[in-house]
Image 1: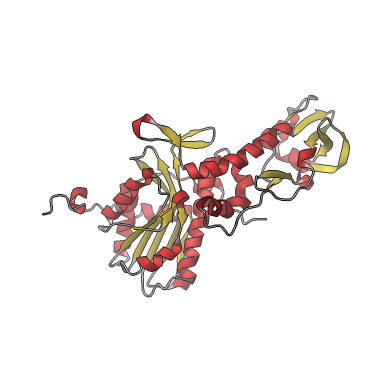
Image 2 (image 1 turned 90 degrees about the vertical axis):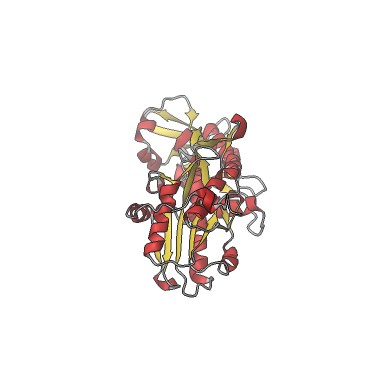
Length: 355
């Protein structure tokens, strides 16, 4: 049983404009006495993320150091180099998703009127698992016969096979059915539905008729797992992403917002990877370090907003006293800060007009 990520509702806070977010982070670090501050960022290498990176450097008056890879994968070892480029460090990061959602997938407007999935890498990872789940939810059927509810499970989901290169569904019979098979079906075996399922979905069960119908959304994350030969050793980005989120894919594909849920879980995993590195492996000396992680909403390749979700604050290198902030605490902390505005223009920051 994997450790459960934070519930979806706890991560869904109102988004902040980038200059508000970054200005509040700057005020917080100024009040905390940060000096020689180096901004560092981990995010996807998508072009939609570059405005955020530029504004981050603008607000902290220093171009930001890169800690990320495609898919918002984090490379914490890059902090070794970052430590030579500044003293205190403020880190911003996390996954991104197109703000326009269709069928649970986020889309963003790109140049020349093009619309595409975003984050595309996480979407490609999601599609294989989602397709396998949707097929199972269609082929497994349920029906009512008097006071009893029956479920027919095709043999392809009953036979156990070794993990292969493609994802497949493994039904958890003990969570889905009660007792031995009641009869043979046309495609598999027919069982009595587990009473716990009936208790979770009383209205849907009560509405069933005698004709079999697809189980659909009633095939929830408690009733199946995925089986696949996942490459945990590979340094290829897609393999690294898949290995980090594989245990949580049943929860992702059954979410009403699967693409966003995958983004949130990816951010959660990468944030705790970074926090563990900062407390256990990074030679921080007497540095102050602030980390803000969350979900970037891409409205276009030029306009983003940001939902803060996870925070980490270490003062003067004291790892054992480091503080962690959940979504509610982090949003409250940031909301209490005034919004810092740089005293110079972005063009001045960029050196435009200097001889």
